[in-house]
Image 1 (cartoon, rainbow, N blue to C red):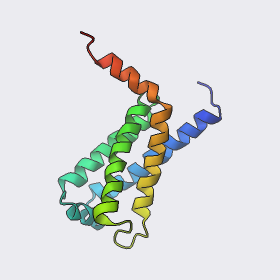
Image 2 (spheres, rainbow, N blue to C red):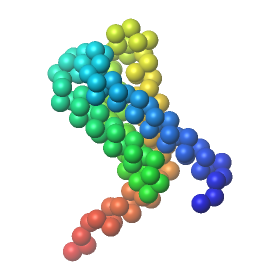
Image 3 (cartoon, one colour):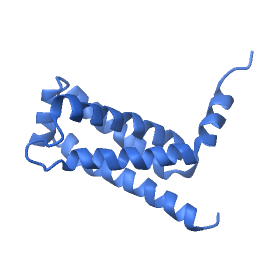
Length: 135
């Protein structure tokens, strides 16, 4: 593998998205008051908090494994789409005086995952064609 500017940029996107998602796991898994507030407001406490945390963990791992980057990116896109949707509809951009930090993090992860999903889209078509029976 050669390390050119494009590869370095993709690694930065992978790591930014993965680190942000992994950072929030501590709050979800330890039952931090902010996480409990968010998922209670959404009517999804505790199963939504724990389930989302597990999915973010899986997406983060998939993002940093080169062969599964696209899958992790699509998973991250789905998770962050949900986060952004709930921020815009039920939670608000600012949650418990966080100055919009959680919203910004979700937006950053969404953008990183979108770029990675487009860049690694051939992995997705490869997975699709390998898994679908032809007859």
